[in-house]
Image (cartoon, rainbow over all chains, first blue to last red; front, side):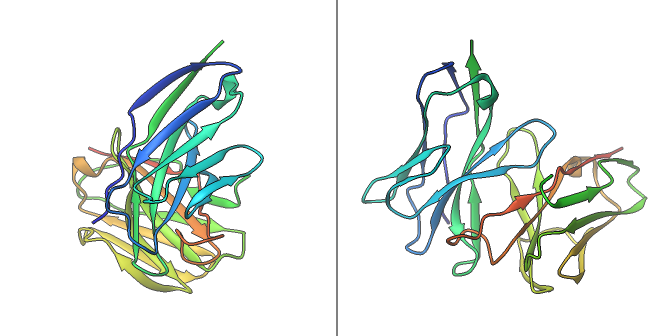
Length: 111
Length: 116
């Protein structure tokens, strides 16, 4: 059974680039890697998804090495509003019926 | 507005009570999920429905009973709960089954449940 591990917390400053890494050593062939953001009193919100190499959208980039045993969420030029908990999710319900969530990384952005 | 609503937002119940949580999605999605979120623990997937059929039940105690009458509504019926069941219960929906490409989950705000 796949397990995802991520740092409990991280601090950074406005304008910096933040990288959060998730470890998923037992990732299955069909699994995708997805990252979500959660603010207090809200449900998680999708940020980005990838399978391998690099994916970029308007808010983040996702780097996945060739062995896919880890992934790194990169947030460019963070602001105070990026303070939130970030979750790594590994799985594919349409193939192996698994969705394995990490425990979340609490990111605090300071002025 | 996420398109997924949950009621009630807060619920306090005794161990002998019976209550129900309601989730409604206005996104035209085909899959719906119940999650349990406890402090400092990963989200726990409880139930998954696809096209109103249950496709996954992750060894959830029978005191939790889901119901999906149609693709827009999902209920979680609760009875004889334990204090350790106190948590945030999140509902989510996705176009197809989650985890695969383009099947991101849209979450509701959750129901904060306290069992006394």
